[in-house]
Amino acid sequence: MPMLLNASDYRRRARQFLPRGLFEYIDRGSEDETALTRLRDSLDAMTLLPAVLTGHDRRDLDTVLFGRTIAAPLVVAPTALAGLVSHDGETKLARAAARVGIPVCISTQSVTSVEAIRRGAPDALLWFQLYVWRDRALTARLLERASACGCDNLLVTVDTPVSPNREYNERNGFGIPFKPRLRSMIDVALHPAWLFGVLVRYLMGEGVPTYGHYPEAFRTAITRAEIAEAVRLENRLSWDDMRWLRGIWPGKLTIKGVLAVEDAEKAVEIGADGIVVSVHGGRNLDCLPAPVDCIPAIVGAVKGRLTILADSGVRRGTDVLKYLALGAEAVLLGRLPLWGLAVGGEAGAEAVLRMVLREMDTAMAFLGAHCVPALRNGRASELRN
Ligand SMILES: Cc1cc2nc3c(=O)[nH]c(=O)nc-3n(C[C@H](O)[C@H](O)[C@H](O)COP(=O)(O)O)c2cc1C
Image 1: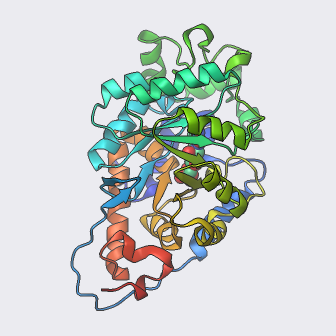
Image 2: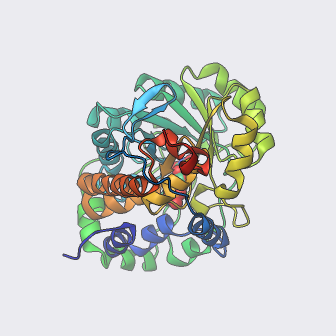
């Protein structure tokens, strides 16, 4: 078995295991993938200045985030349909995150419901990601379920008003709802380990994998053509909706997908606890700037009034440190844990998270940063003590 030493190794192995349609759904961007390229370029172009002779021989990654101490400034990002990557994949991700001591955010569009994930991962620090449904009463009911399962941070995703233009999904036949086509059936048949290890296991147990949170009356088999109007994703969201959510959600409220300073200011005004500066992994609008170019102005304007998280494009521990150095307080990982999940289920997801932690630790040693706050503001060299 080839050694799995970095994110590229895991990605390569995941590519062999997953049907091409599913692999590309996870891996790729949108349109011409310039946002994806820009993301990588922005992180690769950034450097960190070390402090030498700091006299520390251990690094401490503990982080206080939203008032709670976690083992590292990392969060497993919400990813729709992670349950298709491995059987019961969302629960496996939650268990892996719990073992590492970091939160995991469950997507509205997960295959497994938050209740089942909570049962399978009782120790997990669960967050919940919301795509607001047209029917607000059903949306509110969903939030009650998430809250009852102990999710203490709601990430409301606001950067996806319509379905992104992903032409490769058209070409390779992957879509939601899934439409059986000859091409996708051949694709699945060519990946028997996934077919029997994931799909057949669902078919023999729970049945056709579905969106686990959709209410019983609207439950949508992925093969069904129409998603009922009530649970269609709301594309007319406004700040009033965020005020409404602030009013009904008892826990922390974080707005995911903020890039402009003005929007970060509005998030403060409506009483949000946090924002995620994110380009959705380069999967949505192809002409977005990179978070690296947006974080400093946002930090300058709102820091201290809400918690700033960041994501998109992280492939190395050093990428995490770069977002932290710019002022983010924690970083979400989307694709990386999914590659681990594909390669080795729960153990694979945990291995990837531990790999990122190791890379962070090594780089912090070089930077002379003995703790996370010493990295902030991109000036590790000026924060020695
Ligand atoms: C397969 C996949 C599904 C995703 N589904 C969601 C989702 O349901 N809700 C959401 O807010 N973000 C979703 N995202 C975006 C992630 O939460 C995160 O912003 C992004 O993946 C970070 O970039 P990275 O994958 O380069 O780490 C998804 C990302 C991927 C790769």
